[in-house]
Length: 239
Image (tube, rainbow, N blue to C red; front, side, top):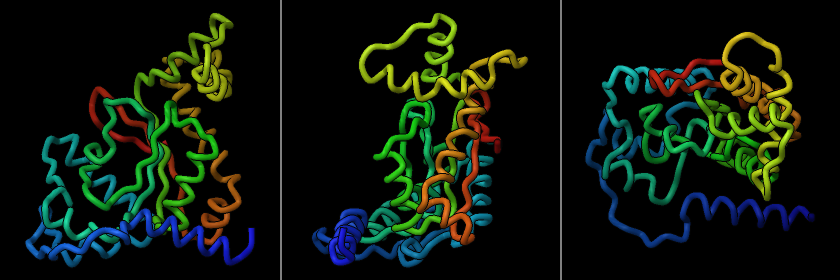
């Protein structure tokens, strides 16, 4: 790919992400919930990974305590980010309907780049989406978020025990999760929970082999971390 074609590709991606082609509408300057204003909404809320992780941790604490402030979930915020975005974290999570990422971290419009796949399984489109969040939207933090009672890991454990295979592309998912299941074989404790945690660690290792993400982390522009969401409590613990 030539330099000019690469430049055009990036411009196209950024235009799609920011809605550059959207019709202009009147700006809204009313304060947003959580103290944010329309003007501040397009500014990055965090430019370093530690601050980004702190925002996620604080938001999750509010969620767990049932004191969610619905930060950046307002008309003012929605209007402010209609033509641009400055998210502060990219999160890879499972497709499970019980893990609504923005709610779990008490965040709203324009705060998070959320990529979802069953069991956080990686493929070219998933990795490319994560790279887009980190490299094009400049999010300083990337989190891989596993969760309690993951159906994909449960299926992978069952397939391992029965030495069976799933049909269609479900088989691809189970096969991709097999290394995590094998890694925790024989360990004490709940096998699915152990496999979920192992899968997060293995997924992070794979992402660090991405030339783009790995280089960003080495340069200190990106931090990659793992988390575990407990369905029982709503709490996210770091792995």
